[in-house]
Structures are given as structure tokens and as C-alpha cells.
Length: 126
Image 1 (spheres, rainbow, N blue to C red):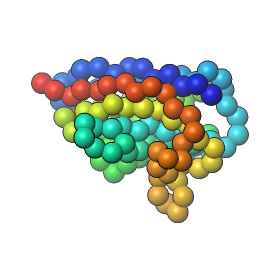
Image 2 (cartoon, one colour):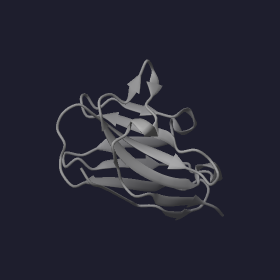
Image 3 (cartoon, rainbow, N blue to C red):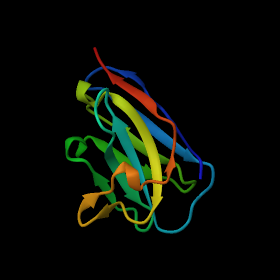
């Protein structure tokens, strides 16, 4: 499946932004659909994941209560980001993989994902 991410941009601290990831086809089966981010000079890390099986959602600790992941019936996965701060500045990428979002309570890392969209830059700055 091909993924296309969009929605990044420049936003002031405290502001909101919504990212979307459109899939070239609606994938059935048990899949994890995630957003990752990579800040300059840092490793790519998972931000949030939604399971196709039951819609369960997972969040990295620093974004809990601020970010919301969702998936519509066309398979587009969105990430609503509120109360943004400069530490959220990064390139955000969407990805999918067969299987669960987490194993033994730990969100799966980027190496386990098979399908990736291009990154979209989110800059939080005044």
C-alpha cells in the first residue's frame, strides 16, 4: 500500500494542526497504523498508533492528552495535534504494518513497519 502524508506546516506554540495519511487502497486484516516523528539530530520515534482490529489507540507519553489519532472508513489515518510546543517540531511520517500496535506493552519501532508515507514537516515556533 502506498501512503501519502500531508498537513504539516508552521504553527505557534499552543496552536493546533491536523495531519492526515491517505492510503492508496483500503487494507483489510489486522494492521497497525502509526505516526512517527523525527526531530533534527534525533532518532525516529513512534508518536501514536491505531489498530485496525478494534480501533484501539496508543500514544507516546509526551503527547498523551494533546494528540488524537483516528481512522476513517476510507482508511485515512489522521493525527489531531493540540497544545503544540516547540518540542513537537519534527518531520512526521505515517506507516503501516501487519499485526498489533504494541508487543508486551511496548509500541513497535520503525524497523517493524513495512509501508511508509513521505514525511511532512511540523514546525512549532513563535
